[in-house]
Image (cartoon, rainbow, N blue to C red; front, side, top):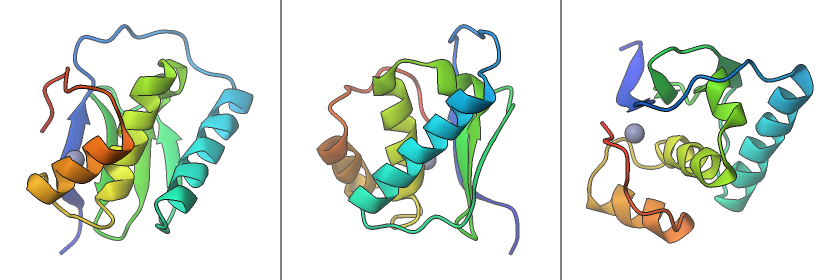
Length: 115
Ligand SMILES: [Zn+2]
């Protein structure tokens, strides 16, 4: 089976801002790696590119992809999406276990619709 895990976080109505600089993207990736360490997870590759309609996705192979626009979002949103995708390396669905883990690591109440 190839392709993505059944996960994609819709970007919703968030404003599309200008593209982040290379430096900001590198900083974002280091945030992802920091979270991965904290959660004791090893993502395959971390990719940041324009995804248009979603914030992030996680592939079956453990590759994480994040939208360029996410890099410029407030920290709470970045953290939430980062933790969400990283947790899929451990829990491949959005069941109760996944939700309680996500809640344990992020204090952000559910706001956007998520798939
Ligand atoms: Zn998900």
